[in-house]
Length: 92
Image (cartoon, rainbow, N blue to C red; front, side, top):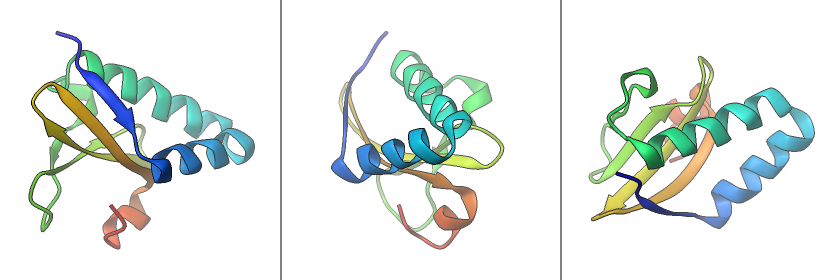
């Protein structure tokens, strides 16, 4: 089942910076968004609840890139995408 989705402005700005500075990371983010929208339970994404933030989920775009999102029914709202160390600091 394909879900509806939207990207928060913060997510879009971060993705644009990646396109300019780290195209490989940008491709990983785009691929992860497509996979999450198609099937959020896909094992390779390692989707799990973000600790300390009710309703927020985290997924892996690559070894170093993380995405955060929340769900409301069939709508997935992508919140942020950044390197895992920034996510670890709580910038979701």
